[in-house]
Image 1: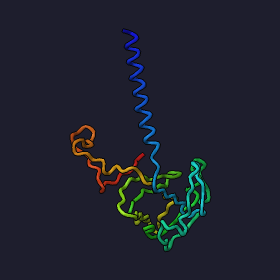
Image 2 (image 1 turned 30 degrees about the vertical axis):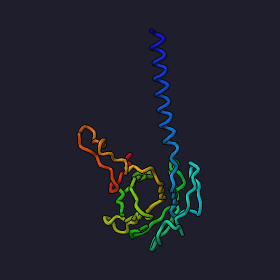
Image 3 (image 1 turned 60 degrees about the horizontal axis):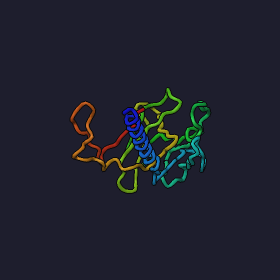
Image 4 (image 1 turned 90 degrees about the vertical axis):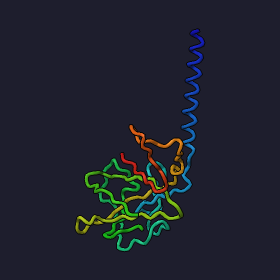
Length: 184
């Protein structure tokens, strides 16, 4: 009897490992079909610490004309912050880069990132960086823009098995009008 229980436990462990391996392999096999890495104000090409190539926004087909904008290298850099794309920036006293996202002041941080998942229908994603209206002589600035395609999470709503808000029976709808922000 002990051998049968040991055999069943080993089989269950094997099946669990197989399921986990398949899940990890499926997640790892997704490769973005679109990948845009813009190093704002940077040189034509730069390599980041992960070996990815970032391209300058200067003259890029992915950015609009910058109007009053200027580029600037960082005078100094915290050693914990990656050089690419954080050593250069595009600054503008007026809105630039073509749906408007309000970003909190990051004055007490070496750097900060904002990450969103949005559904884009068509060929264009417009992002506008706008300087604060609460301060005179404020500038909007951005160091880098990373845009990646991702698996379609917006068409996965199954009316028979809705996603429920934790602790309730209220369904959470993710459709084409939903934008998600990674807060972390």
